[in-house]
Image 1 (tube, protein in one colour):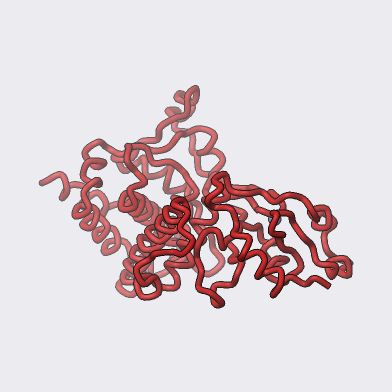
Image 2: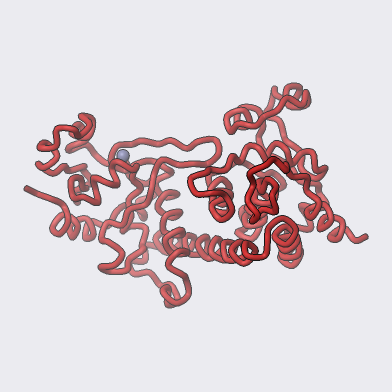
Length: 327
Ligand SMILES: [Zn+2]
């Protein structure tokens, strides 16, 4: 058997928990191992895995969540720690302990919460043979097909392929947005962005570009929470709404936590052209508004590290004239 055929066999025969309750879409078994491997394959396609160490990053967590959303019942959130830990029983995935945690990890203690993993392992290492195979796109395609065919039912398979295509397009889009912004190009030069990228890929790509630019920190209140499984507390907001100018330039974005995002959308909070938080007088009329919001007034916002990604004052000016509630 060739090496590729041997890993196709291993990927096809992943041991999955047959506990009751998994839907037909996952052939009645836990989908987490194949979904995590699909997310890892995506990271190879994106050029994000250039050395043999798979880390629990927000990008990996996000890809895993996006795949989970296709097969899990609505409202259920996947726990990436489970497959990250249990894949070690498949023989090609070894946990790499953090310095000083070697004995603890070797003891076989179960590490199935995101915190347990983050506190004890640096990541996972693949068999060298598998890592080398995965650096070649044609091999990844064969292994991806094996995972999708073996572990998901026929109606679910095209949805997973579509998810893969969108993930790749979104990553490409976010990389283009950041590259062009760093080159200080005022106008995006994407080849006919609207026909080249689906709406979903553009949204996902814009979100990633802005969240990366702000390093997961809310521009207005400074909140920064990234769980060990990669869930982030911030979202990406357009300063001039997308439907007005179709502008996904990172300088037309702000990373905001959910409360700041809602306040921003409602015109109750905004950012002055000299990068201060400004609050609408209408906030004071809402008796139930949390007090800390009013303390943000006039404070400097939390800007991206790179000047080229700062919000464009022209966009802020437009927003403050058109959406912000001045009175
Ligand atoms: Zn906030």
